[in-house]
Length: 136
Image (cartoon, rainbow, N blue to C red):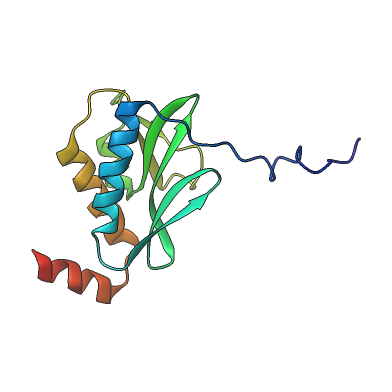
């Protein structure tokens, strides 16, 4: 077995996120939504943006099979709610606690906002949720 050389080791390879104009616009709006929530930040990991509530990731914008998608951290009832809907797919990581939405199909911003906030609530600290509730 050959030893990996710098630049060809799987962990060292990072793909640049390349988006169509429409997906880039969705990312721009999605970023604004995520960063408007209390104590959120963005971290670029694995070649794509991840959105964190405190130190925990609640959403990520990425590509699978060349298609843009948004992954949300959700509870089992929400994951079951969207099972069978071809706009969604099981996120290939996260031990069944994540669900991804294709961005290049019919796009419902109200649903995206609902899922982003639901995902945020699952990982946010109590003090962050108090601030979120005070805004509504």
